[in-house]
Length: 345
Image (cartoon, rainbow, N blue to C red; front, side):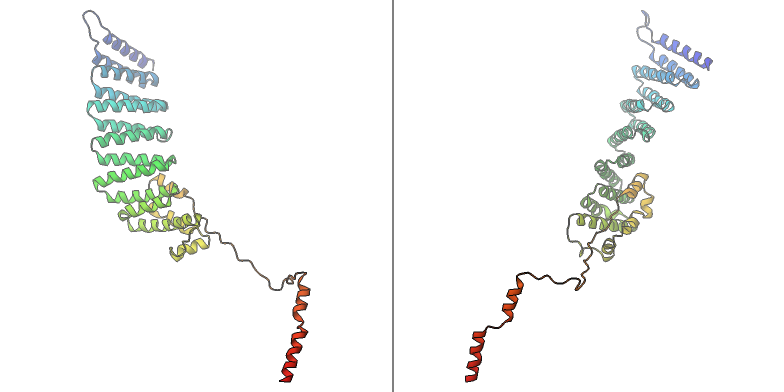
């Protein structure tokens, strides 16, 4: 280890010597200095001195940039990202990836720039998903500028999945629509069908039944038969939940089996829809979203009151006695007159 460190220090001294100027040497020798710094970085890495290895790579990149060797400058930053990964120093990775991508773009290699953004985002996806999200967004912009639609759709898919993972459902719906648009440009209807299912799930997670139904009507023709049947069942269940919460009459607009499931407070219909094989085999984020969607609890119907006949005597008003007697006795005067009149006749 000590021999490697001594060798690295010797390369650093040679690099510093190349950068010095004199009366006869007006311009630093950036090319040889960059090479020496790169050799020093390799020696430090073999000696497990990762901090010094990263610093040498940064100096080598700066020398290449001064020498207008932008591709090599970006490559050194790309290697520095791997050193930071070994050090578990994730805080610097996003900044290094963005600088490297910028240099690749200036050199005229945007595909390499998008690749380094993708690689850095994969490193950060588990520990720093917000930084990974921003890197994937930049990767989408870089490749779409170069008309690489298929690659842009791949990065857009990663953007949408991270947004779902972070619970950013409003932004995820927009990202999925953008991904659908990219797949439309390349004519990939199968991918559009799967994305339609994902968009419906995201809209239901947002609690927006109307947007979910609109997404199904707009893109459902790209879905397979099994996907269509599952989404129809899921939307029927959500339709009931939506209209029950708004106290609307929905009983005549639904199939009898769905309505019966809710009348019996049975959420199994929604559970079967969300447990469809193709949903379970979707991307992990969408499968988890389907698993975590709140299931309906059914319609609570108040039970009818049981009435027991003659359980208690009927209520009688205290004032009803006199009035009842008066009503029961016939009036003497008029009745007698009637009898006399009848007898005379």
